[in-house]
Length: 403
Image 1 (spheres, rainbow, N blue to C red):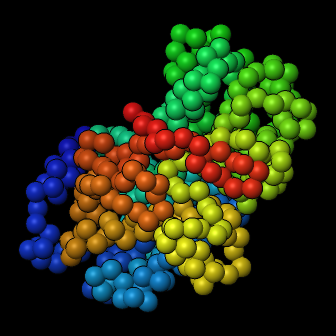
Image 2: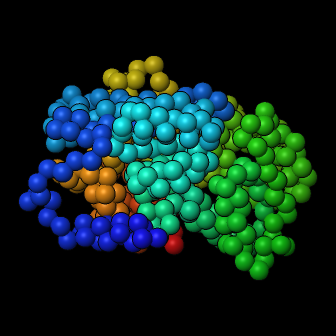
Image 3: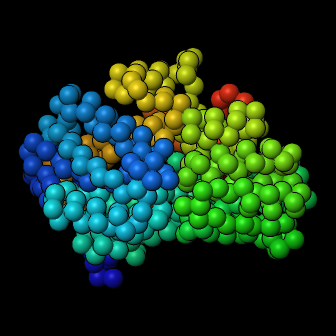
């Protein structure tokens, strides 16, 4: 607790300090010429389609380095495969911190892998910057002052609440069926659904069914849920395979509820195409990032992203929005490091991450900027409802405010 209070004081002090007048101050992994950054990604295993995020981050840093780096320092990304397996994430994190001497761990993919290393990193006062998870547990500066997430959308509890409110606005008497991943993130999403339904939860939830990340199929769970004839089908997973299977199987058996897909699965390349474009038509998902459009009109930021992908990763599937997220989180880190100026201690890196003020990123949707305080580590709280029209994700709502 003393360590947490000390860091909280440092976070608050960052608001008052003048980085321009500060002398150079470096922590582990930083020199006049380099910032060493640690990362893990599921380059193999059930979540491997998400690994494009890591490849895009690396390519983005290459581009930054070719332009002189950040403050003259090159970004040296050391990215290891954890196969989306928490024990492997722990092994990789130790190697990165104790062996490679990185300044911080950045953009670890997923709630379970990120959770596996959080205690180790917080105990050793190593920043865990912009980990990739929408779990609300990461907004806990008192107990995890060295961990901050940058999700694709508002946290799972807020996402579930927005989904439920959107569904009930269309059908106040709707009955809900929920398919969720059997881990902390999936259980949080289910809890968010129940909390949003309030006193009606027991009556309104027709059935909730879980699955394991390693399960080869979710067909049996979907068949059971379809038999409830629920009006709304809510699908939570981080693995594209499970999301695609759920959409496809519901379509095959003729179940036609209003369908909500977890924000991390709103991906044409890895989910909608395998599910079948016709099967996915009409699916809804909450998002903060601009939906990918292959031929953008009047959107120079999306055009710049497409040019970047064609130049840097010509063999990657440009429709995989996990790449778009990688571009965004890499852009966010560069903004953060520039904000640190020449004070690149671990304490100040974390302090600046907790003091983001209306930070615009090129691929965030209108009205959404990054904002954090030492008391609130949630960079994104709002989003738009997106809908798959059979070919692309399109914006289907005004800006929806989270809590």
